[in-house]
Image 1 (spheres, rainbow, N blue to C red):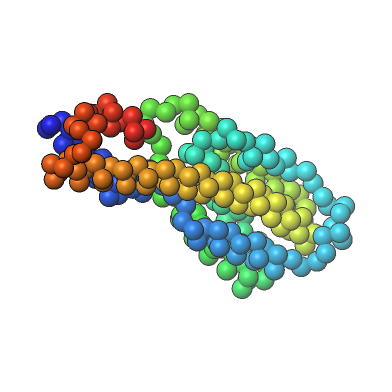
Image 2: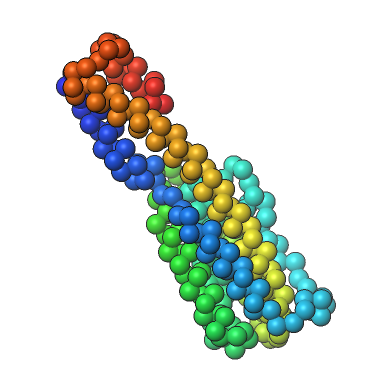
Length: 232
């Protein structure tokens, strides 16, 4: 009984702080922040993109990496965080301030920073997951190469209006992929959380029966192995 009581107490503590037990969850306002980012990037347009067709460049966006169903949550959050960081770095320069409407640009910087702060709280890895760490490092490296190509392009084009417009459109594409990735993370989190809450409700019922001595199904049903079977 002492073992069972210890087990139930531990699991109940987990349920009382469900978010901590399940890990990080992207809040609902992350969706509205993404929408604000899209709106602001759209408002930054200075000229029709078709006027800059001669300046188009394939920046080799790592689309496959962003859309892979094999990405684990830690990798997905790293991709999201890395994308936001690089976009913020790109637009957080004097050259960017000289190219764009500073009022809109300042709003964009604020929204990007807010999203980045959200992802920072999610950067938790399980110790010993060396494979995951290596894959995340490779992912971050691919993103850095991509954004380095964008910065070199701007330098090559001497930060012309057309060059910035091409980059703005490219950033909207990159952010669109990261927003879809963000939504995938939220959907997965929601599914896991609903399942965990259902288990916690069952656990609360069992805990109540045990603590009051009222167990109509018999103590055998509360055996640790059977209890774990119902909660996994």
